[in-house]
Each structure stands twice: as structure tokens, then as C-alpha cells.
Image 1 (tube, rainbow, N blue to C red):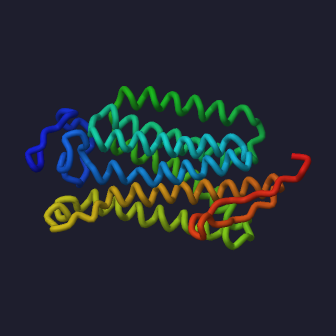
Image 2: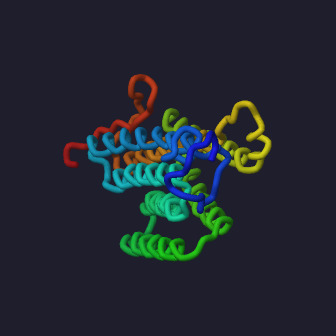
Image 3: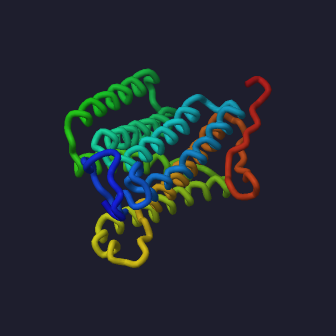
Length: 254
């Protein structure tokens, strides 16, 4: 191990990333890739508090909680670099995308009980299959397909939203996922070159940070769109003048 530190978790059995292992602690394999998940947890917690405080539908509370679970799973994975912990990171990624699909498409689903039942069974079947079979490229392709299924609906919400501030949330969502994806790709493809630099920009850690903001912007945009559907007069306001969130005014009958 680098700097003579030993591994508390044993040999690496999962996908290894460009960050050097066990440089700062024998208990944390990739320090930057581990702590870079903290912003996602903080942002999801803020979103959860807002969803509960203003009594949004439970689906949004579950969505924010799923973001936190995913970030915690990622922290454990990068701290240990073990196969089981990697599955504990990847399976929640798929579950989270299934939840996004439900939130995006549920308003137009004719049979309300069919969709959540199908998505639940699909998520459970994937979890079992993923625990038995290791498929790296197949997982990435599968995850990308789930992401692509969300794009048409997000675009439909965008073009039907007139509020300028809400549209900015969608643009920030697109910007963070584009830049984050580029950081992930460069870190993966050019690791040998980057490892020889005096300073490693930690592209995978940047991916974590940007995706934390990406999830928050996506959640906030969807909360705005849903509040608009329910006639709750949503507005995008900013906490401390920086962090956007949705403020609603429900009719007294609700």
C-alpha cells in the first residue's frame, strides 16, 4: 500500500479507481472518493426537511432519503473497495432511477397500482440478480438506459414550465450531469496519465460532488412541477441567497 500503510479491509475485490489507495488511513481506501459524498447527504437532508416541513407528497421524502442512502453506500464502497460494498452502491443507484421513473411518469399512468408494483418487482429482481452475477459493462449500460428513459419526460416538464427560475433548475441539472459525466470519463480513461501528474484533480470525487448537486436540482425541479400540477402556487426561492428550494402555498381546503 502507498506510504507503507496496510489495508484494514484486505485486498481490493471491487472496481478500483484512479485515486491512490490507503494514502491517509488504513481504514479508508480512497479518502477523496469517500468524503466527496458528504455534499450529497447534506443537500438531500435539506431537501427532505423542506419536503416534510411543507408537507409534499411522500414520494419526495422517499426520493431524498434514497439520495442519502446512495451516498452512504458510495462512501462505504470507496472506503473499503470490496465487491459486496460495491453492490451496496450500485443496487441503490438502480432503485433510485426506478423511483425517478415512477415520479416522472405516474401522473399519466392509467392503472395507478400497476406501475409501482412493476417497478418494485423489477428492483427486487435486479437486487437478487446483481448479488449473484457481477457484470460491470452490463451494469453501466443498464443504468444508462434507465437514465435515458427519464430524459423525454424531464424535457416535457421543461417545455411546459413557464417559470424562469424553475427552468434554471433544469438547466443546472443538465449542466451538472454533463460536467460530472466528463469528469468521470476522463478519470476512467486517462488514469495512467493522471497518476503521473504532480496533482491528481480527483475526477471521480468531482463526479460525486456534481452528482450530489445534480440530484438536488432534479428533485427540486420535480417538486416544483408536481406542486404546479396540484395547484399549490410553487415559487423557487433561495436559502441564504444561494441554495434554491421550492416554496408552496396550498389552498386552505388542502
